[in-house]
Image (cartoon, rainbow, N blue to C red; front, side, top):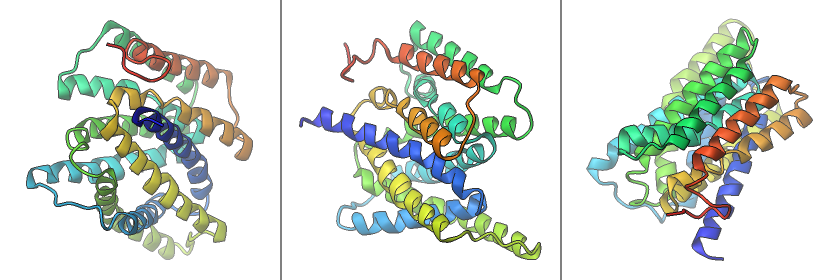
Length: 298
């Protein structure tokens, strides 16, 4: 298997794992508060990656500290924290579908930050995706609107982080970048997790979850965070960002199937229309950059 085919296979695995994350986290959020889950998720991932990559770390150049701090604070803390809140209020299928907007938003911020060219087809793809979002929002009210807002903010922050970290990802081992990012996120989530538990203790309703909830935390810590984010950072270091992002539609497909099967989430016609528009917009945006085998077309 050549390097590119290996990269494509790893990307498929990455987005299948990302898709399962939404369903598992929705189950978890019924038992344990958001930031408590997030703290243990990144702590477990940090320990796991520390053991896995203890002999592969190199010294970080001082000028690159800001990028790693950005990855941990804005990416793993800000974007993924909002992603969790989006899943809690909007549901696993909706949050995952909105997260698949990343290929378009990554392209948009690449134009602003990296001065990449914005083509007419990418603008058309963005317009279709925005129309799709409006279909999903539909007549939603209350928590669903709040969840959609959190998910969209998460997409924006994650896209900015992906573009910024692309500047240093070829220089360092992907495992190392993910390890440091998880460590920074753990420190950020710690005071929020403590605050949640103290608040629950004062109100006499501790939420620590059962045995299966902790198995789920270990799963999202090791598999959905440690392994999946390592594979994503590895893919960014070996393939073009546009190619990597073209695999995003796999994620909502997996999460929607699992959410309807395991969580009994209902799928409305407006959701299906919105999903079709978003995925079509993504494919149009990438159509002339990537062929069916995922290789760049000059």
